[in-house]
Amino acid sequence: MIDTPVFQRLRHIKQLAGVSLTYPGAQHTRFEHSLGVMHLAGLAAFVLGSKTARFGDETIQLIRLAALCHDLGHGPYSHLFEEAMGLRYGFNHQRMTRELITKTEVSDVLAKNGYEPSEVADLSTGRSTKLPAFVNEMLAGSVNVDTMDYLLRDSHHAGVEYGKFDVQRLIYSFEVLGDRLALDRAALYTLEAYAISRYEMFKAVYFHRTVRAAESMLLRAIELTGPSLKRYVEDVNEYKTLDDSMLLSLIMMQGGLARKLVQDVLQRRLVKCVFEKLYHKRDDLVERLFTQRSVRTAVEAEIAAKAGVEPTSVYLDVPTTPSLPYTPDQRQLEGIVIVSTSGDGTRRYEYTPVQELPIISSLAGHIYMLRVYATQESRERVARVVEEILRR
Image (cartoon, rainbow, N blue to C red; front, side, top):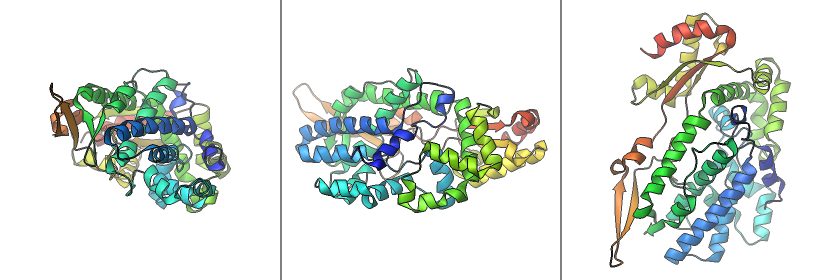
């Protein structure tokens, strides 16, 4: 599997799109992340298989294989590509993962080795109907091995401490109630550390002011190149040739503003932040800004018009990823099954709503950070009008 061209493509897709402009060591790729997720998935499957006796070595290997394939569908520059192409063409990396598993040479490799491609595809995206639901949660739930790996890996390569937590402790504390993933009460502190790590990595690394300046420019360049990219997201055989360098080449051939934006990013001539605010409560405008791209585009145009600058000079940036991962059915985390063991060995299972876990509760949902960037020449004019518009 690892030697297939589809998987080797991940060597050429950075795990973190624009982070290396601020944290130079963050040059790692989706390739090594996928290997790490496979390793942690195997460990978690071993722990849960041992505790429940509901599956053995063959199923553990299936789980490892699905975890290995979980990122096959990511596009170049990962979430930036998906945001740009999802809005225009309905692109979704999970759908593409499924197509790459079932419609390319990956399918042949799986079938040759006794695996059903559609079963691997379902499990890799956390949608298996053949295995217990807790396996889906382990791979794609609110406490999952994917997030565990990238927090530790991203923290290591960026050279920061924010993403570190005791991953062994957390995985060995996994329990099961029925079909639900549960957690030993003694590991609640580790769960809180996991949640805090993700929140801190978002603030300090993933949503760093300079990182997002570069990524906002790249996102706009990808959007401007959209029509030239359409065939790649519509044909799986075209898509499997698309990586970071190929995307940059296509943008450069596009010319115009898209080409200039990429050149500026490569030479670190970035747009400047003129407004930043962390919202601790939602109101109507904030909710629409964070959930509707059309509203953000309209506000960008309004800011540009009032500042007397070109609309392309203004960038309104918000995070579109939840601060804690969603459940496999794409809902926010609502509660956790906690397992307590008394002195005589009696085990008690208790469903604990997120509201009763203050640290977890406070970090659930989205990080409501709003920033506005402007080009160097329009910076002062945009700064004069942006607060009037966004603080109303």
